[in-house]
Every structure is written in C-alpha cells, then in structure tokens.
Image 1 (spheres, rainbow, N blue to C red):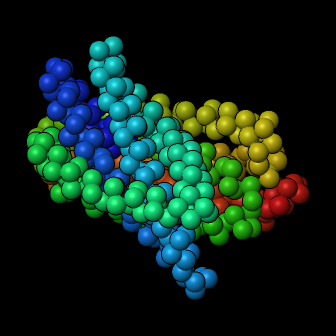
Image 2 (image 1 turned 45 degrees about the horizontal axis):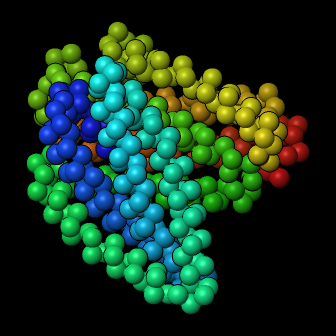
Length: 362
C-alpha cells in the first residue's frame, strides 16, 4: 500500500507520464520493495521462531529453516507480483483519467493479504515436503539466493533518485508497523482461545478499516504534495490537529472524503457478515444484538483511523517527513490493533450479556 500511495502521488504530479519516467519509477520502487520485503520477512520469521521457542523451550532447526525460507521466498515473490500489479494499475488509471489514489491503494489493500497467505501456504507446503524427503539443501539454496540478491536490490534502489532517500529513511515505519501488528496478533491469539468465532471476523474488520484509511491517507498526502512544500502546511490546512467534528463534518475536501468513506462501513460489513452467515464459516450466529455490537465496533474503528490519518499525515508533513513513505504502515498496523481489540471487547460484551446465542464463544 505504501508503494501504491507513493506511485499515485507521483502520477498525480505528472511524473509518470512518459515511458522513461515510468521505467525509472518502476525499477527503483521494485528494487526498494524487494529490500524491504526481504528484511521484514526475515524479522517476521525471527519473531515467530522466538514466540514458538519461548513457551515450549525447544528449538527445532529444521522448523526454523522452513519458517525462514518460506517467509523470505513468499515476501520476495509476493512483493514483486503485487508491485507489478500496482504499477500497471497506476499507469492505467492515469491513462483513463481516474485518480489512482481511489483505485491503486484499495486494490493493494485487498490483494496484499490474500496473495501473501495463498503463496505462503503453497511455498511452505512445498518446502516442508522437501524436508520430509531429506532435501534440506533446497531450503538452504532458497535462503542463500535471497540473501545474495539483497545487496543487488539495495544498489539498484540507492542508484535511483526516486527511491534513494526512502532506502535510508523508510525502515522505521515498516518495522514499527510489524511490531504493532504483532501486538494485535497476541490479542487475537488470546481471544481465539475463548471465542472461536472471532477468527472469521477479524480479517473482515481489519481489512475494511485498513482499506478505507489507506485511501484517506493517500488522498491527503497527494493533496499536500500538490499544494505545499514538504515541511510547510498549506493555507487551507494550517494546523495539524483539529477537532473531530471538523474532521468529519467540516467543509474541506478531506472531511467530505471522510464522510463518504464512513458511509461505506456499515453496508460493507453487512455484506461480509451475511456472506459469512450463508457460508456458515463462523462459530457465531448473526443475531440483531450481535450486528449492533459488531457494527458499532467497526464504525468506532474507522472513525478513529480516519481522524488519526488526518492528524498523522499533516504532522508528518509539517516535520518534513513524506507521508507516502511513513503514514500507511503505521495506520494499517494501528487499524489491526484497534480492530482486533474492539472485536475482542465486542465478543466479551456479547458473552457477558448472553446474546441468547449458544454459539458465542463456542
């Protein structure tokens, strides 16, 4: 999503109109994406290994190799595939005279988790079968190949003026987002042990919230790039913080966008909720009380995220930090944390009031 936001801004500024500009923008950003995916994939696998080792007290080297190789290969291939899709979407949107902020970021948010999880399942299954027949060398080859390619991606990103700065300054948001999301994962792990139904609704509430806030952050960032110099807020948005009422009911373009995005929350969740009900995918029956509590949590999450997006993007801009590179990782991670926490509280509340549903917590 960070790539989609960055490319959308450059396209709206007219810096991706020629084939030469598109090629330079694409190669630099894909190389940068490979660098970030490799490092974050390794850190994520390392965190998972530690979290698996602490409760059991046993460290399995074969499982560690499998986890690390699966994570690195999945991150590398998924980031390449999604990066190519995002570049195509942004260029196509520009040619069709459609604002890529409204198209590329939602597509990135929608395809990211789905593509990564599906690819991870395939890669992990294949590498596990290799370990089962004692072909450990193949797992080692994957690790060595990804490690050897990392300096190449770094040099390509460093040599490109569009990504040189991000290569040095873009690590803190990505790694911090991973840590924040991991806290949300711990909350989910605790909640699932008591309420099995929460596992089905957690991707929905976090997916919708992350999708909507990414659109808002990308649009605000493009607005600032078009009307102000980095480090100075435009006259139309002179302050970082504003009261929540103005953020949603004011006359600014950001407030109008926030209202439109907010209006999508309830209909979107109703569609997903009844889809889950029809597929009988959850352990929780969809009752009127459940809908009221669940939709309240979803609306609160998006309200919080949209307000945070306005404040965070303007604050970063005033501090001469490009929000295209930093805001969305924080916002989506905070969205995961807030969504999971609110969902857990919703299930606790439903359990406390009974809900008249024997499936709650089953």
